Length: 381
Image (tube, rainbow, N blue to C red; front, side, top):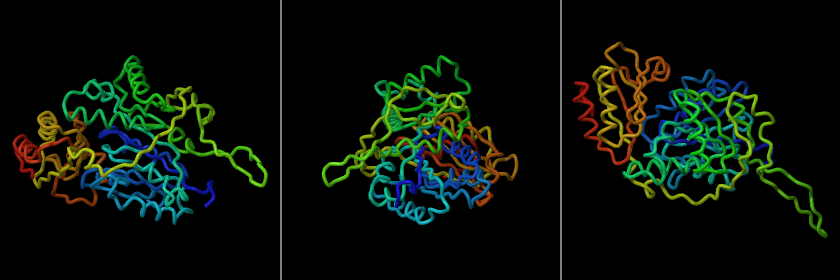
């Protein structure tokens, strides 16, 4: 297959709760005529993010969504990623771009390595790797490498730092309540952690101009002049470097860009299975058949995050306010319950059951279930 015919792939990475799915939903809505294929990877057993993505897509013929729950795609032992990508390659005429949302506990290098294998490299080319950052988390010194003291904080700092290290573009999200000094501090922290990141962008509420996310061609080799030596002809392939032109006038776009950041090589290394690296990260799902008191449930989830190392909570619940499902999103002790976001995404779920996914570092399922049951006055198991 000719190089120009390869399907561009954007890898979207970022820690738990950074806003990856929200950013992808906004890109899907702004896709114009692009035909997209999305691979959504969730560490838990429930496919919350995939359902949300389907609800936001206005044409599921033009936006194909593939769910990957329970584990990390492209890591050792995963047998789903390559067959799915080859199936997409077989439909090349119907796909303009592939977006891969990795789990918040994954490094983008696992997918990047797979894309470079002979099996996939003939069909796909990496367009760019975007790291979506929960900026308040970035500014929290507990999660900065070298400052973390507890096991959970050190584990977060390790993954968080390495996701930034392998990114081409860092998107500073959740910035609405931050002032200019805090934004400059966040930029300095990114540069210190990942000095070779090419672009930094600001995304209030995960809104990003699609021209800053798709079609960047940051890993597109360019052919140089032929060199003739005797009977042989050599073609030099040059990867874009610090002098590469990505967008001609970034200043006119809505994003916030900084020039002068040089290119970098990723130095990819072979990945072992996730649980061989750090078996402390766990996910479990709790369910209840009782209607939930919304405010008490929010307080219970926040208290669970204070008493147990819970980093992420998400799911759909039925409340006492009515029959409509409500979307629960929790990042540590920050919890929201939103009915509007859940309407279309929960259509195929059981109407009498609430379901929440918890992800954390050595959390106790029984303790969280007992806490939710006690504080809401309903039964969770």
